[in-house]
Image 1 (cartoon, helix red, strand yellow):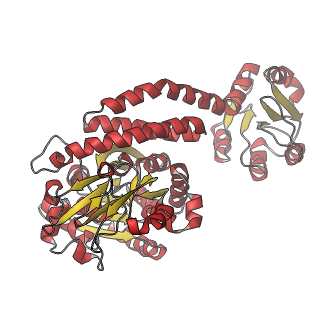
Image 2 (tube, helix red, strand yellow; image 1 turned 180 degrees about the vertical axis):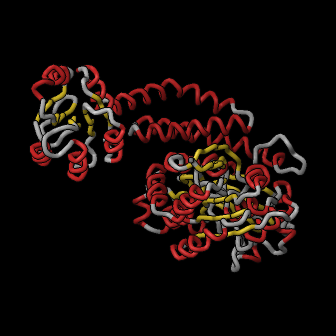
Image 3 (tube, helix red, strand yellow; image 1 turned 60 degrees about the horizontal axis):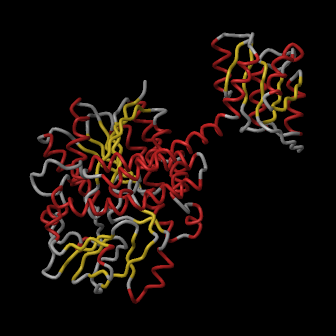
Length: 524
């Protein structure tokens, strides 16, 4: 295929009256575009197969095949080429056909050379101009963001600044501004350090009984966000996507918004930011110390049975407590494809009656953990951007998407959230622990735990101070800060090589703690 480069782009204009459009062509060429012309669709397809084009201007009303017929053939030949339909018809059916076959723009004749040039510039130069503007805006915002990180004093300051950092991550990744992304990651490192100091200074106050001036926490998800959906005597769904970071949610939200109006808020996970603690807190509405009182022996005595094996019971108890027992519940946890199939078969009949539906989807958590165990997954999800892409790819064919389609069809409102996020860990910190210590890489409990560098962890001598099970006299907790992960002195090299650059959770970082909670209202 011939690929002759042009300064701004190469255009193919398909129109049986092309001679009448010479002024339009001259304007495009004066602006730096190369323009080839052809009077019919068959010749156009031959040229597309021989040469590469950056954009096609396509007349609707030509002898033989119409422009919309040609559009289908062009999409088969090369789905990426922007196509602008140019037509004399203002009929809505013509516009609908063009949209259905993915025309990128639509111009009605008679048209001026400037109008055509504007449409072409928007499609060919728009992305680069937007990227340039994004870069300029970030450079101007850099100092202000750093100042806001340094001056953040309250939890609202931190939700605002972290939300902005996530937005910039998405913008700069989309613009492929690798150099500026490095600057952003430097800011994010500063934010992790300051945020960890802030959480350590305030967390015990947040979880104290009767404390009111605090962020929404895991225990508040059902009473604060979900129970209002049940006030209408209709089914409502609480969906928890395990281990979903805020940036992953923002990427998913753009797709979900095609079917739902979304209202997003932010809340803070409890500590440790790990499934046994955070997700039980969501479904039970209680802190881990209360859970240990109600379930003697939890967490250590429940290792084999599963630390989250009774979420359905916790969910039912909490909804009954908040509704005076007037609302039925249904709970499902989806791990595998067979789980998905059986759940999707049951769901339509479940939704025939008013009830609180609780659904847990574990794929993102499995992906995040599996990345550390599989070289293939590691290569596919090397960084946060790649992890977002994989999350989107999963969603497109997932049971979650099928569930949301069903919810939209039934007009059922959904509260979608997560139990914790994950942080990209780069720095090991050595801990000294006995054999009975818990094995997690970002949080541990056991007797006489100690970190070689105390500045890398939160050390909790008395678990009750932060609403964790008290344990024995010598038991304490270590919770990793920022992007540190635990290694043992006896397995230093093994753990460093195995877990460095992994996405982990359980510790204190904005990525793990500041999380989305979104109300989804079906469109239509």
